[in-house]
Image (tube, rainbow, N blue to C red; front, top):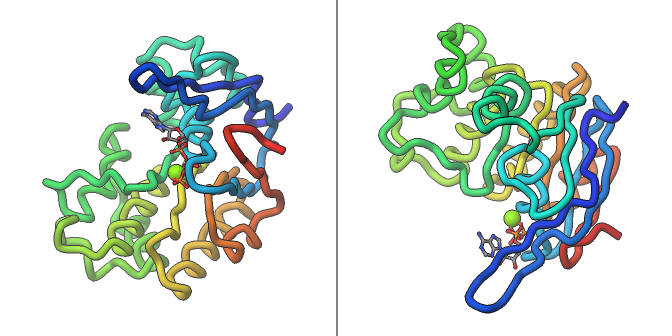
Length: 219
Ligand SMILES: Nc1ncnc2c1ncn2[C@@H]1O[C@H](COP(=O)(O)OP(=O)(O)OP(=O)(O)O)[C@@H](O)[C@H]1O
Ligand SMILES: [Mg+2]
């Protein structure tokens, strides 16, 4: 059985008297242990597609089955708990909490599960991302690339089974991009399923399959 199955999902946004079909009838399966790239032009619907798949946005039509669960048939609370235990999401615009330091931001998912992250584990992740010397800094004190790597560390702290990443290397230089992709590749070899939205052919090159989205449709 596929880990993720999106069945005829659509998402309409109404702005004024216009309806934008951001995602227009996509059906897709992703198997457990795959590492998949999602590519396509700006405005094609990639971020919308990713959020629909990750249980963050209810589709206008269609359904998303993840690990056997019909995500949007669950109650809000059950879906939130399911996401906490199974899914990590790296946002295109980081979404760090501005009042918390890097270390505190990274610890948030563990604290939501009533676990204090082990220092060793947090350190191993931040070392591999090259941000250990930034742990006491607040987001406004960090560059875009550093904030992005903090957001990636936060997404990895709970050992998620399924990682959704929206342009995780969009603000990184080549070296940091390779560090992040090497880390994702290791997690993938350990059995994690990873879906990455990217414009970068080098990033897509790390993935075993490419889903191309144009005008809200796969082709
Ligand atoms: N909340 C919203 N309200 C109205 N329209 C939206 C909303 N979110 C996205 N859209 C529209 O839906 C379409 C798809 O947007 P989306 O952010 O999914 O594109 P994208 O492929 O991720 O683009 P980019 O590469 O620039 O990040 C765009 O036309 C966008 O303007
Ligand atoms: Mg986007």
